[in-house]
Image (cartoon, rainbow over the protein chains, first blue to last red):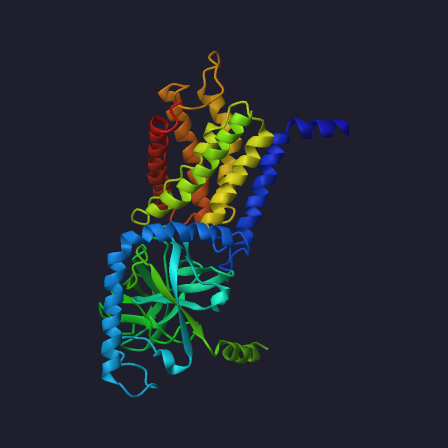
Length: 278
Length: 167
């Protein structure tokens, strides 16, 4: 027994190393799904506030870009508004823009600022400066003026953490706007400007520049929010599906202001879906 | 003693802040991400016992993890190179010349410090990127990422020795 203790004591460095590595791996594996650790993430109070202070400085460098983007969105919304001054219930002309109007009753939008964001990891996350106090809950969609951005996964009082489209743990339910063909969009972890469409069969007619929008099959996003346009597609040898590359409409590197989407009917929809599962 | 605790405390926090607020935001072409925070582990005194070295490295990695939402990955990689550090130092030092306690550039020859940096950075980045992607598919892409990011990290670490850590 005493020789065992002596052995352990002599090699304590290795055992210390080994146990620390085990702890790290437990962290890694318990975090493998998109639902991240509850406390040790950048939406926490302390780290969120550091990122917010930092972004309040660096955001000045983007101001002109943000300005022109907001002006463009304003113009687009105004032209939509003038087209039909009276009716609130109709979905706006799908040619000009793709949002359901704010007062349609199904969706509520909360504006938020991006305080931290990355594009160069296989699993990218985005931190926003709105949290539980502003009515944000998990599984709400994040969109910007240019299109879809991500989905909220963790919420604290003042901050929320979400996965962006640039995260391989997630794929977006989408459709080709022209043909209404449903498919899902995923990111391959390489270039932050492009994503791919999964399982588009050969009989679907595709054209370069076709618009890809959200399908509305999930309760997270309104139907018809812009995702991107088809950059290229090809038939690979021995494959049954097209290899479709989509240019994302959002520039994830310069993204600053976003809106968080709340579907007011989520609980009802979830209840119905639970019935089916039972 | 107190002097070195304060000194290494400052290095620890400045390394974390430089890493998460500057280098993690560079994101060249979504490809290059230098990690220079391991300079803290590299600069710890050579006589530091393992029961301090390993937990300190683990703590540093975990701090970076919490900031970058990658819990466990940096902690594993940093603990790994901390454990490897005495082996690397033993391999690249000549046996007869053993006089100083601080593994900086000024206290050692440029060849010694380059070898030390290359070995530490390469092993760290290798563990880090493979844990991050967690598969051997796209092996070439991962290796390319490791090499490009390593070159960048080594450059910044050696440069920092000329600019900041001159004493």
